[in-house]
Length: 337
Ligand SMILES: NC(=O)C1=CN([C@@H]2O[C@H](COP(=O)(O)OP(=O)(O)OC[C@H]3O[C@@H](n4cnc5c(N)ncnc54)[C@H](OP(=O)(O)O)[C@@H]3O)[C@@H](O)[C@H]2O)C=CC1
Ligand SMILES: CC(=O)N[C@@H](CCC(=O)OP(=O)(O)O)C(=O)O
Image 1: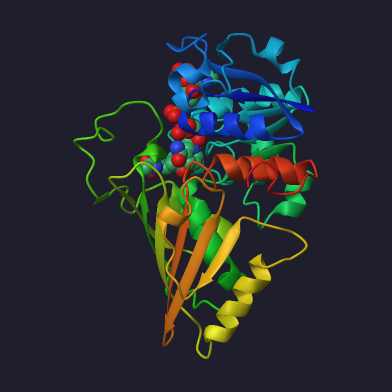
Image 2: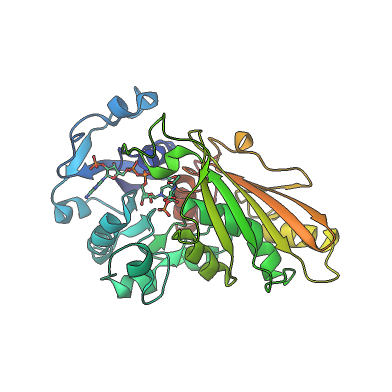
């Protein structure tokens, strides 16, 4: 059994991770941590997340002494804000732990990316360069050898899983930038209370227009510019991305279907993408699952793709567990289905 710690365990993604680690046949849930000053320190996790009562009643321990905590860990899951992950990851990495970071702190290379989009100068260039991007269906060879996996953001997961097969097959006219409109449930913003997330304030509204940090994350990993507009929806969880792109002349339904099948239909190696063909993806069918559902329709040279995930699962926690499975040569969907 691999001793597994969850840092940021009281948050939404942390609680999902706790459930999956608890169910995992090869992982031992060795500790749940919150910040040293946390108001929730020493409470059982099940006091905050009632569905865990009687299943996981471990306490949320304050993370006071990282050096002492490191001793007991083979695997560390960082379900913490970007700056916190940025500061904590190196200590766990230096001690030889495998680190799976759900934040954006190690996802994108580039000189000014972190100061432009995250508001801090990256201090750990060595680890940023070593980090492997954990888009599980596409990076498994690199994940198998990684010590630090940067799990992709929720919108980037839904967007890239739909577009990447077509780009890799050379079917998209990149001169017309694909347009991604995506709606997220409010849990995408985390558990802490803010006015914009409060029940009476949430409507259906675009935000981050032309400046959301997921645009460069998507564009850099796809190697294709995109227009990306996120929206906040008045529901708890799930993301639906509706993506419009232009196909190259002569590309038709058959090539699109073949590219999707080549990317995701492997009998020998199960993955978390389900292809719907001409059916539109919906949030209802993926919430509380580890799956990304992808549908598509063509009209002349235009294609509209729909891609749905649970932001807390395939958009964060289950993708992290998928990466742990790949890294440690367990079947990829262990503890997820
Ligand atoms: N929510 C989502 O859909 C997605 C989230 N992510 C990313 O995953 C990460 C976690 O997100 P989410 O679960 O939503 O966040 P939450 O705000 O729900 O949880 C954050 C957790 O971090 C803890 N924490 C804060 N500061 C520290 C610290 N210094 N040391 C240890 N623990 C700390 C908090 O507890 P306390 O403050 O009490 O210490 C809490 O447990 C973020 O980086 C987010 O961007 C990625 C994809 C999707
Ligand atoms: C609804 C909502 O607020 N969503 C978050 C994205 C959540 C996510 O993917 O997180 P990362 O910050 O780890 O990339 C946002 O737009 O900032």
